Length: 86
Image (cartoon, rainbow, N blue to C red):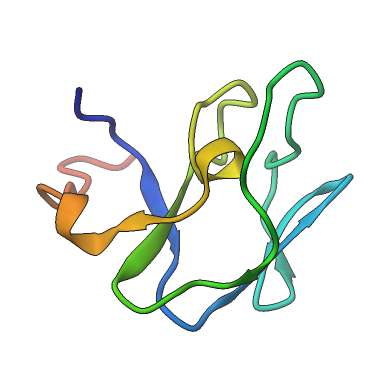
């Protein structure tokens, strides 16, 4: 089932998972703290070649790379851009 998420990190970016949230290349991502009730297999480190890190910064209960780690870039099916911003 496809999901719609932002790409937060690309290959070779450094992802750090902390008790306060996710940091990408030292930059804290707002609203990215993992929920304590969710099981996670994701670990901190460099995003491998051919992989991306998906993340929602608006939904604390979003099922994304915070919980399952990086995903293959080949799994990205489309790019979505805002049509109207106000």
